[in-house]
Length: 154
Ligand SMILES: [Fe+2]
Ligand SMILES: [Fe+2]
Image (cartoon, rainbow, N blue to C red):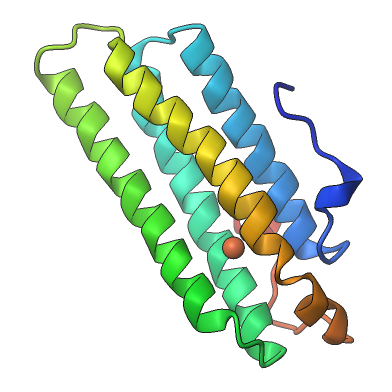
């Protein structure tokens, strides 16, 4: 794994950490694809899978923040929307380039944009921003019933 999971990343020792581990695997696989300059046809399905897992995860985090009356909820929701919009833009960018002038391998510009997004999202959101939730999550004595682990979502 290019970026390994660390215990220091733990937030709830439960569903949120499970999600983060799963997202970390997907992000690492995406970065590995880019290093290997995978065929461009592989990139949109990978990004769509990441988006789908991210969406389910963001909903879980927001449910948890809401259940713990955390003041971070509104700002965190905005940040999640920004990540999803960026993913949508990247998916559209790759698909339009693929349909146009790129041939069957991504060009250096798209590789840079994707790598920067994957690393940036991981470092700035999954690790730094989500860490701010830790005190609120710790204050939430029980995991609400509507926090469903990602593996149950698919
Ligand atoms: Fe998260
Ligand atoms: Fe988050």
